[in-house]
Structures are given as structure tokens and as C-alpha cells.
Length: 253
Image 1 (tube, rainbow, N blue to C red):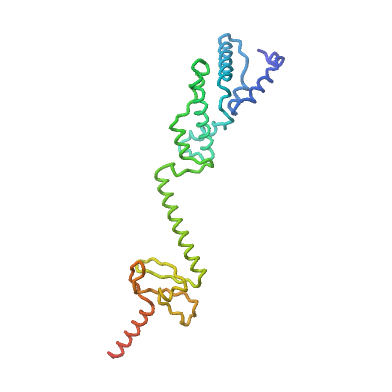
Image 2: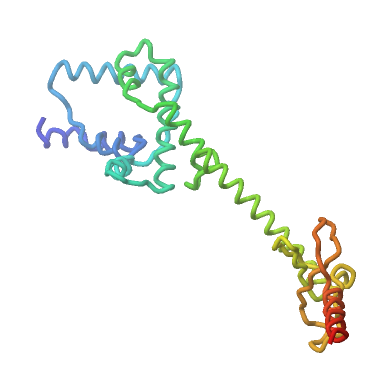
């Protein structure tokens, strides 16, 4: 048909109304390209498909489909060798696949009598395995969930355990700081633990009356067994042993 004939029939207004009902940009683009056909078979096919869809909606209600993002940029980007899609793009792909499955599931049980609509449903390719994998791997903000892989789940679990341990140690040190001067008890295995100033005389045999003053942080090694059974030596015992050694050497001299 000639363009002036289409204009006289206000065909452009009809197309505009149909475009407003489309759920995606590709659908709107395809609708904008529609033109009347003068082929008898094609006209009959289109009329039959339209009649089937009208009857389907009259019995089943509206098809559960909402606006979805144009997938072409993501497909083209993923087609490159070594390409990686970001979390936001993957979420949009996931939502498209899940939405396609919902529409397909809704239509498959209702299109037995509608040959042309059934052909459209057959083209809705949305594998269940792919949908399930993306649902279990991606959060709505595009970040990876723990179930994305067993290795990721194991690593994150270990990191959370270590973070809890670090927070516990920080809380212990903060408590000690609040109670007074903090000194550290060094164990023979190389580990160390904070000791409150109020407890250090009992635990470490600390000597406060030295020249540096009572606020000096000392690193004392306690010889007597602590709660963990570690052998430690106190600074007092070490100094006593040192003085005894010097006296013994003097007597020998």
C-alpha cells in the first residue's frame, strides 16, 4: 500500500497504540516496522494468530509479562572471547530468563488449541538449569551469593570466622585499655595476649617501680604455668637469677 493510503487510514496511530502495549524496546521496534500485507495467505495467518490470542486472553486473562530490558547489548558483549559481564548486566539477563520461563509456563498449559500461539511459545528458550544457576549465584544487587560455587562458600565462611575472631580480640584489647595500662603477655609459642593493668602484677610479676615510671609498657615472660599450661618466666625471677649468677661468679673470683 502507498504511504498516503496508510496515512489516510491513520495506520500510524494504530501502530502507536500497539507500541504502547509492548513490553520491550525490541518489541516496539518490530511493531514500528509492521506494514499491511496484500498476500492472502499472510493476511489469513495474521488474522488467525490475532483471533487465537484474543480467545486465549478471554479465557486465561492477561499474560504475566512486564517490561524487560533489551538483551541485545549483553548478548553482543558476551559474544566476545574472554568477555565478562558485570553484576548489574547479569541480573538483567537473569530477570529476562526467569520472566521468559514464567510466560512459557503460563502459556504451555493453555495453548493446545491455538496452533499459532503454540508456535510462539516454542520459541521461548529459557532452560531451567540456567535460570536456577543464576538465581542461586546472583543477589539482586549483582553481587555473588555464597552458593555461586562450593569454593567461594568455603572461602567466605573462613573469612567470616577470621573476622569474628579479630573483632573478639579487638574487644578484649579495648576492655583492657578501658581498665588501665595495657601490657602484653608473650607466650613461648610466639603468641601474645593483652593483660589488664589491674591483673598484671598477679599474672606477670610486673615491676612498676622502675625508672621509666609506672606507665611503661613492659614485655615480661612468666615462668610459672599459665592457664593454657605454657611455661613462662617472670621478669622478677629472671632478675633474681641474674643477681644470683653475678654473686656466684664473684665468690668464684
